[in-house]
Picture (cartoon, rainbow, N blue to C red):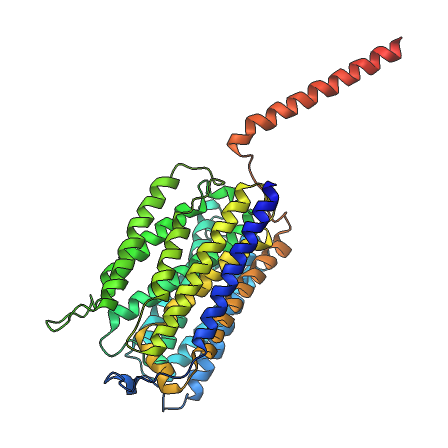
Length: 449
């Protein structure tokens, strides 16, 4: 009866998620914005009139090959302790250096993206020097040096993502007309959701369904991220970085700011409730925050119809994320997934919706909406493009984890025995040992007779 009721509950939740996602796409598949009153700075957000030069094209190709393919593969080879890891690092560093140089050849060295290249170059030099030191023996290969190198490699992955975002902002001329705070808020919070989804995906595949190695429930770390995201949203939605005497609070600013406050307060509650819990003792607080925020975004009206549609997509993705996470918590609590099991297929559904919600949040900022209107891009097409990006991101990191398993060779999941089950397992093992000895003694006595 319990399993039947649970199956019915799962079907209802899945049906609700499908209906919400379908409603989002149907609502998005509307006509272009018909308000007829666009802001004065709307003409600035359009596809660049200046054609992309050959140097910029070479820069993009070389940087994609180096930072998206070779260097991440080299990092995986380092984690797997592969002997040819140094070759991937040196070849990737050389190609990345050429790509950065071609980006400077293109010109426009005064923008943020070009200046960010200096930081990427210094990070690349540090990573390459550490790798050469470990390979040639100049740096002793111990746990601290290897951990430092892997931390720099992981940091380079995040910085590569930031560089892609800055490149897109610079190319489309976004965040340049006095709305820096709103732009930072959308991109920072959306990026936090995407990075969180990637981290959960990798941890589930490497450590298994329960992620015992975290030593605390997953919601503890989600709550910490919510605190950070809520603090960013609280202070950036009303042009915190660019204030003037004429700025007035609108309902839109008030709603976005209060969402940041609710995330901050809810994150504090989630941390307090899970800071001493077992990894299997999952908590619904982050899911409830996702659902409440999603409902607020679905009913959130903007001055542009296109903006309302993009926020509707973001809200629907958040509601689906909350419902699917509650379903996951229910199945885990019911014992459908054991501590030593690999992640079940349904556990990847919340990860996808988390990535999708982050992508929709980044894509619903004001400047991007004006770019969509000027480029005559339908919202349904835009939603499918962003969802395609989500699938590409999940595929990319899924392949990297598969590469690690292929190179390292160990089993995908290795766990320590859970503390709360240690006594039970030791008792069962002692009982089995006693039964085994009793059987041997009875057999011996029978043979003697």
